[in-house]
Image (cartoon, rainbow, N blue to C red; front, side, top):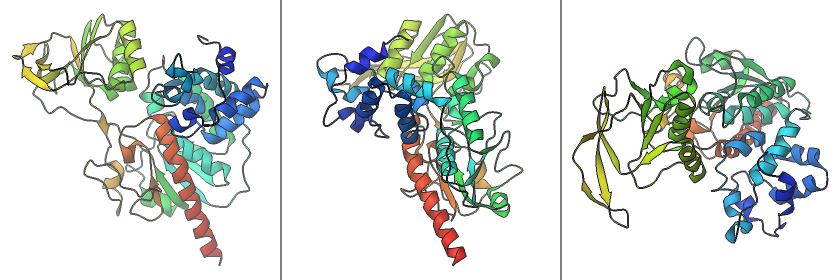
Length: 410
């Protein structure tokens, strides 16, 4: 491991008002976990981490720590912040195979989870632990959603997700792969078959388009499609990526590992939207970043841009003439939106102007008994944000099923 976790743990000041906790979307009690770890109580620390965030070991690897926990660490004001991510990974990874799957007594009620991404996994675990019968439905072969099919192996080893699948099975959670709700089965069918609540956590898998000439050419692809199965693509030696978010960086670093020799990310603004750490890794891998680029059209020979000149305050001053930037392949990475399979086959589920499912603050949709959360509600967000929202929604589903059970038994 690159960081000596014991040395890092010993640097913790045990602040009375830990800013690292405030910076974490799920408010992980970081100083408490470090104290337990140093006292030789690693399993207890792991148990508490899992209870607070079932995807702790995943978040330790993929969170934007510099904006969250580590970015708020007081040690970082004059030096280097404590690398909590390394400590968390060490504790959580060690504990994952020893998770104590203690469930409450069965409540005799079933809930369906549509989608096995971060939101679906979190809610499935939370509800199964409370005694509900849970079945996860997913359109793909294995669990993980964006964790498995949207984050590269070098950032998140898929063996971790396989270990989670075993934990879900230990909790009695059933998994139906290759089953798209809205196809042969609908939400109405789920209610017909005895599920008393349904959670929709299908993520955002429809690429946003540029709407420019050349977008349908054979050497043009979308980032989310490429990340699902990079081995299915022959990108050639030079790759142009339009967009500079974390997905764009994942595509660039993956393309380098798959044999591309020249990979360039073109950003419209003056800086990348991706996290600084991911940008630094990409540059170390050999990825080039070019800023102030406005896409005009895409050709067989590469994208055509105009380049913006900015003043010191970031205001646009002038634009260059159109210029071809040669590339064998162009990949578009400007975020994603939701597919509409479920809402088109289900009555009474309202959506926003962007096609996202509308919910209140507790995850209730406009149809009774149907809840939603994660990216399909908020748009593409981080894993830890999905976990934070899902814990609230799990409480809401639990309250709904409890009220329903009490009403029917009265």
